[in-house]
Length: 452
Image (cartoon, rainbow, N blue to C red; front, side, top):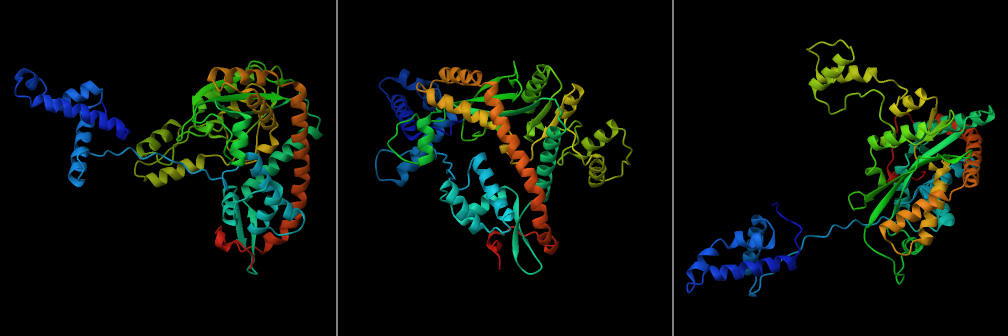
């Protein structure tokens, strides 16, 4: 039986009282048989209370130390410290607010103005009522891979990381070209989300307003993880709904930690088999979506593992080469254009995969579908029982129509068209700034973030 470090003070007090009683019986000289039986007081206490003997020893030791340090006869016990994760209201914003932040930055450039953190905070407050500080906004911008770049004249300009911009433009060009060329293949968007057991309109409102007086269920409860795919042509893909039960906890607050590549791969292949014609599959770059088609050695792989991988792949190397040299050999074999296992599987089955740029969920209409589904669950969730919430979720998913999908898809496609046009204009605006940027500067310090 293992040591229980999570026993609270009241339980410790009860276990210690049992121990004291057995100890008293072991010292009863008037009844030697009973006294002899209770000689092993700690062992018997552990068996009686169904804890380990190490736990009993720890409790008696704590009682002894407490008695030595306190004048009171009754020992005092401590409870384990509660784990508390502070909610970061100013920086933990959802995907839709993230999109507003990014667009706020872009609006300054589109209007031929240069954004600073202070300007962005002011504009964002007008749009959303944001109450965070300039420092909090900078943390959000940094998480979105924005950096301040120093120009030759000493001024600093807020710039988005180049590879993020490149991936966004590549995606927008691809999607716009598909529509302009009248490609008849349906575009299937997929994604995952979750619904909490305690999901309700009252809970959403209370969390948003941070007020008291509205009684809603508390506690972590369970979660339902949903994975699905759909298109404006036929709605959700028939037979491809995946609803998994999982537990929510402080250590696993995000559904991404409870989905893995094995589960997703099986679902993905089944979904492809349910498609009746060649399609374009649009998905994001979650880790379980992005397993390489070739299993390259990890950066922390030992030398023998790297050597074995090189042998299996027919790469000649000298036994005298160091681990660093072997890693460079592996690095030279990794193609610049990443090849993912799921993309290869889809291609073999007659489909094409297009990857969303990171942090750009607004281009995926299924996000709007999720909002509709969660709204239905929240509106009807009155019992807060897991089985009832699961039924509400399935009913909400089944109620999504082809027309719902068409409206959401049209909205995202219009957004893609508008943003693609803006990217070309923004490129012209930023070119003079980029030419003046000091190539050796990579500052992202918030203290240096304002223009001089």
